[in-house]
Amino acid sequence: MKALKDKILAEGTIIGSKILKVDSFLNHQIDINLFNEIGKEFKKRYANQEITKILTVEASGIGIACIAAQYFDNVPVVFAKKHEAANLDTDTYEVDVFSFTKNKTYKVRTSKKYINSNDKILIIDDFLANGNAALGLIEIVRQAKAEVVGVGIVIEKAFQSGRNVIEKEGVKVESLAIIESIKDNEVTFQMSR
Amino acid sequence: MKALKDKILAEGTIIGSKILKVDSFLNHQIDINLFNEIGKEFKKRYANQEITKILTVEASGIGIACIAAQYFDNVPVVFAKKHEAANLDTDTYEVDVFSFTKNKTYKVRTSKKYINSNDKILIIDDFLANGNAALGLIEIVRQAKAEVVGVGIVIEKAFQSGRNVIEKEGVKVESLAIIESIKDNEVTFQMSR
Image (cartoon, rainbow over all chains, first blue to last red; front, side, top):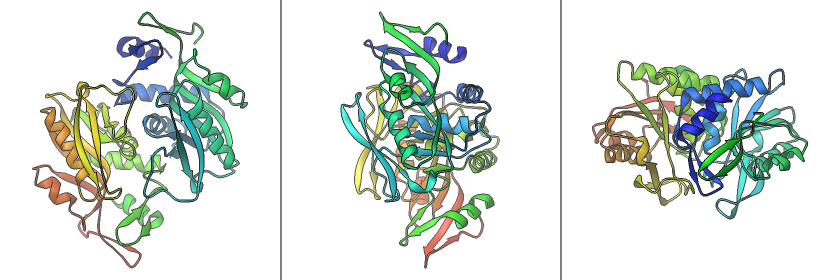
């Protein structure tokens, strides 16, 4: 997706050889025009697929999922909780997710009320790196005996193992920008995407 | 806002005499059609006001702010962080916020890059109870020497002190549903709103 790649090149900041900071438009400040383009592009990638719900995880996925849902006939969005929430139901689907960034395991939870066995779910998230967060969401959908239609990612780091991890589960990944490498303070995208 | 009040009456769950659970449409599962109505209503309440940015706090405020921004000429949304974020700038505006629900103090942070002294900011959040979260966001805007145009709230609990706290700061509060009381398992709204 050209507009997204241009934005990454214009505003992304590189830290070391692995971290791309995009908090000017994606996960701290949010560019609503770009999010609409992202939503349209997800719809293009999953055109003609029946999708009844979008599942994401707090916090950065929520804005992307909400704007994108408008291009999928306003299907409901469910965001899984990573943090203790006083009001969360006790009857939840839950998985342990290991975060390499934070070097710790956290629980991801979704109330059983909001995913059911008839649901056809599109999972959306901001980044795909090692794939643990997306894998956790797939596991939650499967606990609910619902169907995972696909995983839609804004920025994929192809030099980490996330895509393999997800595809091994038989799930299709669509990433709007795929980063081949981060080297010498420069981002290189995969040619074909 | 009638559609919102109807939804609260139809789907809200009461716990004790203070807690209203609305996670079927507001803060776990998200009703995108309703969020668009909410966005339109915020625009009505702040019509003819110059707004350059919407500020909210993770996590439940993000979806509301993103959808609402579409009715304010797609102004950028900034969401303040409540949780440690590996990639957050170290140069931040920050405040301590005491949460009565969790009985602890947490830090709310925003990178200095995304609020500046020319900004005219609409603060949006899902609930107004004791007002501490909104007050923290007002304080962040003032640290940046920007202007708070107003505070837009989806559900206000009028039996807690939030509105007084915010109005004492000279800031206008617009709440789309104002709950007078939660008694005998029944929600009563303020007549005039």
